[in-house]
Amino acid sequence: MSHILTLCYLIGSITFIIGLKMLSHPAKARKGNLVAAVGMAIAIFGTIFLYEEDGNKLGNYIWIFSGLIIGTVVGTLIAKKVKMTAMPQMVSLFNGMGGACAALISVIEFQHIAHNLSNDGGIIHQGILVSIFLGAIIGSISFAGSMIAWGKLNGNIKDFAYGGQQVTNVGLMLVILGIAAYLLFSLSPENAYWFYIIFGVSLLYGVLFVMPIGGADMPVVISLLNSFTGVAAACGGFLYDNKVMLTGGILVGAAGTLLTILMCNAMNRSLKNVLLGSFGGGTKSNAGNKEQGSYKEISLNDAATVLAYSSKVMIVPGYGLAVAQAQHTCHELEKLLEEKGVEVKYAIHPVAGRMPGHMNVLLAEADVSYDKLLEMEEANDEFKNTDVVLILGANDVVNPAAKNDPSSPIYGMPILEVEQAKNVIVNKRSMKPGYAGIENDLFFQPKTSMLFGDAKAALQKLVAEIKNV
Image 1 (cartoon, helix red, strand yellow):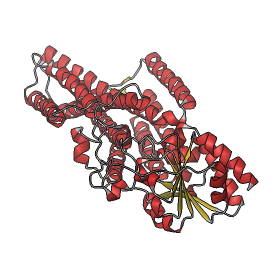
Image 2: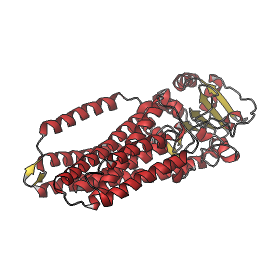
Image 3: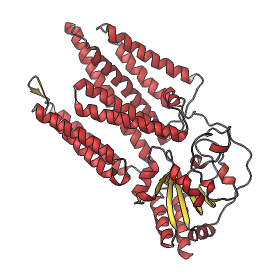
Image 4: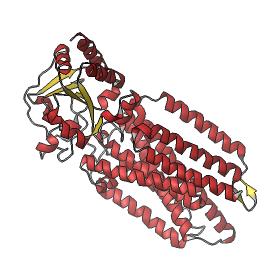
């Protein structure tokens, strides 16, 4: 049976790698998810029915399958009902549950060690303790941080920053590591309670780590917390000598870390600032605000005429598009323009939306062709040959102040250089600033026209107008 179980773990590990590879391209991403899910199912049921220790199988099937059934039903219902605007919240919530599971595994295994020490003074393996401590620390930070991220994205928790924030976070981390080092070499039944202090302080660190971070920076934070959960799960794999759990955790941890670095580069931020909990600043800065000129509005009829008689149109989707649930109407506009001989493409900023790949997922749901989605560097090369850029709910990712104004909070952040196009039409509900809390210089440039209103309603009216052009 052990050989068959090893084969199940091998199959699971291979499917994880294949599935992750398939996720690198949107056209294969859905199938990649299914491949990895099948591998996970094989590993889970292989463990339930084939795992043996000292000749004894797991047992407790009622508890195991009750948990599986409840989790499957709840997870399926949430995933089926979630709106695209709430997808980041769901990702944070599910990721937090993974961190909590990894932390609880460490708590349970530590209780076993403490119990054995109390009974017969059993041998302590430092390697096992290291895995337990890392799983508890990283898993609890991931859980607490993900719950705060979920609350902030959901609008229930406000940004909160305070003086000495970095010093506090560094101090808490030193306390955590200091207590862990102390227990590692001197654990006894009398001082075992210090482990639970580590657990509690780690939860506090997770809260303080995410609290000051602004909504515009959430893609980086979600990615980083996801990597934390993967590392914590890998620690569980070490504890149980479970190869598939170890492989899955390493893959998630490595992929999340690489994605975090890419997100940081896209925001021109340092990973050091993320880890210190000062990323994004929690309060809105007035730096970069300055007296602007006047903006001009464009009528629906004029916007429709400009779009219909263009040779090339680039659409820049943002969070406003997601909020309005306008992705399907946007795709309808794209098809209508193409019928009139207009070339239409989409320019995607790496941190547009509230999670990594948010705009890609949003447009994929509307069956937008993957070939039409251009990454930031590729899109910037094409703007100079574009007749009209249509911006739908994006703000800071198209603000020229990131290049031109050293006093701006977003100065240095790579942006979509839409101002290079011949004409720019911006759809927004109002002139309210974006998450960085500053005015967008783009809105006041001579080639920019504002089309106010809900994105879905505005696009529906544009479609109707273009049909009559």
